[in-house]
Image 1 (cartoon, helix red, strand yellow):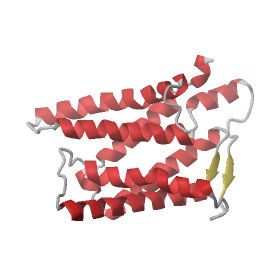
Image 2 (cartoon, one colour):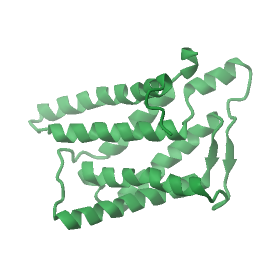
Image 3 (cartoon, one colour):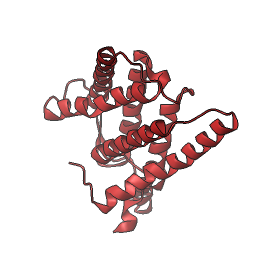
Image 4 (cartoon, one colour):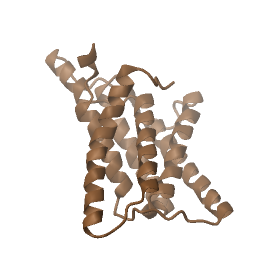
Length: 205
């Protein structure tokens, strides 16, 4: 369950939003220099997208530089996470929840960002997003699990198919202001980097 009013969660949210805000300001300034408009609705949906990324980080618990430094200072090996490379080894409620967790990603990507309306690009982005989270988890007590990678990617695919159905029903392509290359991936990388480098929860203890 997301700890909506937990100070650690709010700290993590700030680590997601602040770097992305800096990037967004740069994005808007560059667009205005080229006389390209950036709609307020697009920017609002981007913030919804960032809020979703934070919720995923809050649930999954990605590893951070703070985790690495804490263990290095204690003279311990910072690589402490478990791992599982056997497919379908963790079937259960968590298996289904991992699918559900990434369905919004598959929907939001093509809904907000024009270039992600190709299934292959959206699914690959979901795969990379999950892979980055799994890679950081070797630095905390979470487990790096191939099942998580598969289910998150599959959830992204389902979300994309829901978007396609949504489009067919409403007969609308939902044109957005952003058609830049890899725009969503830039936000994802900025958000992950923000948490990885800025989130040091032990400072609040």
